[in-house]
Image (cartoon, rainbow, N blue to C red; front, side, top):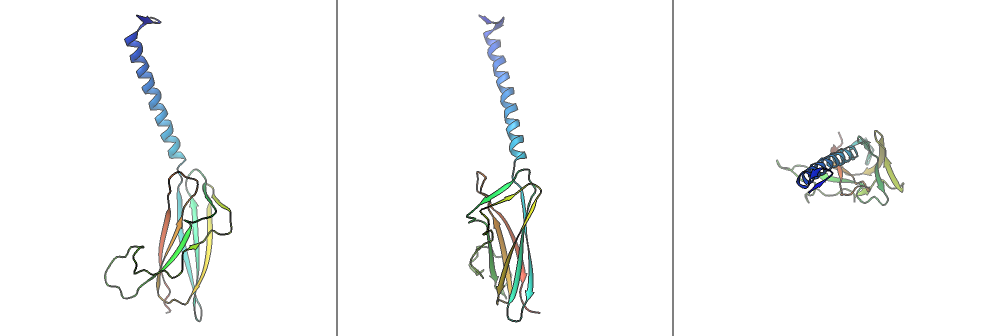
Length: 170
């Protein structure tokens, strides 16, 4: 038996080959599309310390730069967009400390640094800067962590950046 002059076996083999080619092209298209729409963010913090008579003033600039090809969104409330500052104990022996180590005591409760907007949009090739102003009488070394969690991606992903600064008086 034949269909349009092609035997059934040849027709089945031809349809399998065509289906495989179409499936491979679709998979390649989806891979390229997802790779080109990947969100990529660079985040950095720059603390500036101003010594006062009785306290330290810290101006922390949090800089976000979208180096991807799609906008990055965050909607209010911003529970994952936090700034944490922890005291680093002086006189510790040779050791390594994890951020979650209980020896690192919080100087302040976590600060949600994106508070005045209902949503934050970082367009491709754009940079946004947030400023957090903190005053403290603490006079030692601190570790700073800034976190950013976008709200419009399927999987939960967090960008974190860490810095160590010295608040001791000279």
